[in-house]
Image 1 (cartoon, each protein chain N blue to C red):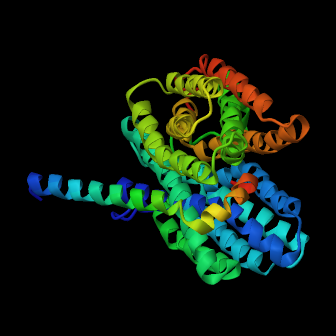
Image 2: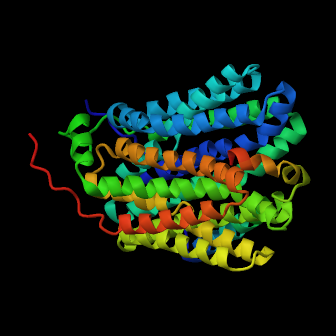
Image 3: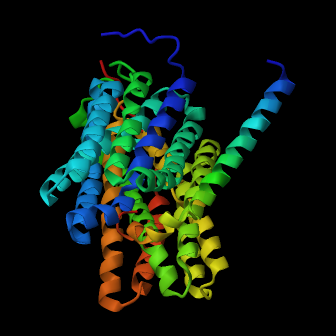
Length: 401
Length: 44
């Protein structure tokens, strides 16, 4: 079946729509923590009840991403994004009415996790990758990634303002209205069923091919480390700073600096990936993270050192996204890009889960975050070494009928 | 569009983006958010 692409669906329109979708999706998800206090107080739940649902959401997001990607690759990204947006909206609205831990797990955990899998990087990057030329692809992925980063930065204070003004239940419904805007925007993402290069390959063949390539495994484990570090630092840095004698203001400013510099970093590394070797840039990011953490640990903890560290980590934060997704497209082609980036993203989410949980566990066991920081440094060095042997050359396939 | 207008509009756009980012950055210091900052420790 051949679908005629309307003239208005230009690469620029697709990029803008993709950026806005990522801004909304990533941004609203980032506000989850703000609902902890009001929801647990109103329902009499423990913090563990709340955080379990959010941990479940992160896992479902990662586990469902390869399937959402495969759906988008096979049946079109437009309808996948619309379906996921509906689940996301339902999840938020029903979360506002959840009266028991089980319904909270099903709404905030399962429904929103499924919604995120179809409205974030794996699916959106696949569409953008398919509609940009190889020369401009990395830059376009960097801009889209910066859109997601902007969402994380901008929606957090908006979410807090909504909770303060209207209460947490109305705030959830209002945020659901924002996520609802993704559905019409998905019309721009509808790229039809036309197979891209590698169209003769089946899903099973694509999976076997990727599984047999060491570079794919290196990308997976590199992303695992990225997830570990970002989750650990975002969740535990404010506590670490307060434990070190700094104020809550310093902690929040550090979180804001990470968010702000993340926007520039995502764009910068996307642009740089179009000019040079993407795997060398991944090596640079992971090595620079190890050095930054090491220096931060060695220097006396002050407001300035905390802010400089936050800014540096912000620059290095999601720069891995356009580079990793770009490498998947470069090596394996565009046909199953969404599914394959979804699998690699699963590694990121497993790392996030471990980073968030292990950071707290280590603190509870030892009374300090020192061991967790050391693990973050060691993993960073391993990720840099892991990224070095990635073969960036596109796979050569026998011609298909 | 004339090139000088394109540069002018790009400059205005960048300036507005800068102001927007600065406003959002300052919003991170709102008292309610500071009170709730511990929540981020759980769910970031």
